[in-house]
Amino acid sequence: MAAPGDGSVAHADFLGFGPGSKAGQKGLGKRKRVNKNKKKNWLRHSDVKDVEEFLDDVRLQERTAGGLLQDKADDSLFFVDTAKPKKKAAKLKRKDAPLHIDLILQSDSKIPPPKDIASHQVPNGRKLKRKQELQAQLEKRGILSRSEKLLQARLNKSNSKAKAQANNNPGRSFYDIWGEKNPLDSEHQGKDSWYLEQTKKSRVKHPDRLNAKPSEIPAIETVGSGSSYNPSFQSHQALLLQAHEVELKKLKEEEKIERQLKFPTAADAPTQESKFQELCEGLVEETEEMTAVEDGSEEQGTGPGLRRERKTERQRKKEKEAKFLRAKLQADKIKNQRKQSLFQLRSIQTALAKREGELARRKAVRAENRKKEALQPRRLGRLKYKEPEIDVLLSDELPESLRKLKPEGNIAMDRFKSFQKRNIIEPRERAKFHRKLKVKYVEKRAFREVTL
Image 1 (cartoon, one colour):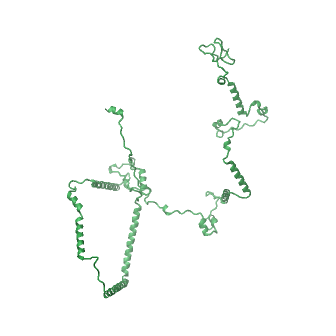
Image 2 (image 1 turned 180 degrees about the horizontal axis):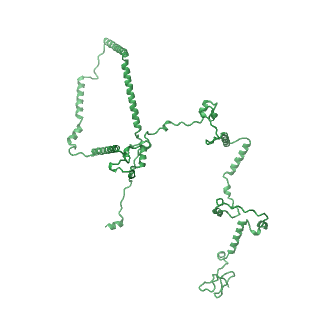
Image 3 (image 1 turned 45 degrees about the vertical axis):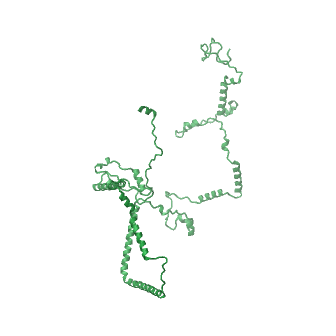
């Protein structure tokens, strides 16, 4: 026989009463018999559904009512409504009503969440507590800490300052900022000049070099009228001539390089005689000069053994008198020149005026050169500044209208070149790619089989 409470039957001929009964069907195996004397089969083959439902009901009551309903008093569960019916509360407007997602996320449990003890712990709590107690004792005695003193000073300073009135306040009073009774200068009245110089707030004076521009060239230069989409004939020809001169300069430089690197022809090639003459050049003249010097030294016959004759007393006296006479004549000459210079005042003034005019002219030339140099880019790096190419259209490429005009040049490159020309950045060039490793070509086996 089957165990009580089990849905299966002992014999296949017995008819079940339930709608889910499978009695009478063929092909079904017999009920598996399980030995419940063993502990490992208790939970696996035991029906604990009713126990789980009971525990779920108990947990639901604890969440919603705060405990079991059978333990609650009737007064806590029911009450008699003796109040007068209140007016129906006004329905919240849609903009003031809470969102549905907020209502879903609200907790429906009356059990408070567990307290996180770790979140309420303070590191070094005991030490801080003792410090606060000591600080409280010192404050009772009138001793404040440095941080507290600074805080009090800051609060007093902020309170003592009067709040400035707004500029758009129509009721504010007007005053003359240049007058004697200026409220802005009231705090500095009656103070010493040295005190005002040292304590009065003044703007920091920046050096003049910070205001100086690196170049006098304007940021955006206006191009000539020949670059217009509808230029005049003269202006367009002037622009073409300028571009032509630039191209001629490039061609001359290329020809110079080719001429320097050109291998000499057979007629211009050096021969053995020209090579030997070039090697011996200057040697023959040096030998002739050396022989002439040697001959002259032999004729003079001077040597270390030759002695000079001693002067007599009379000769020395004559030399001394001649020396004094020359000095006297020189002094007389200078004196006469000074006397004669009095009659040359006009010529001296003319010479001075001429000299001053020459100096002024040189000064003007130097100033003009400095102005020209200020308009030229300086050398800031290892590279020199190169002027960009002139954007020019030929006569047959000029458009008939502004609609057919094609853009020339690049705005980004134009600004980059402008920075270089105005000495803001140094001239640069695009970095060249250098391959460190050699490229190795490998022929795959499949391709080699096809090509064979």
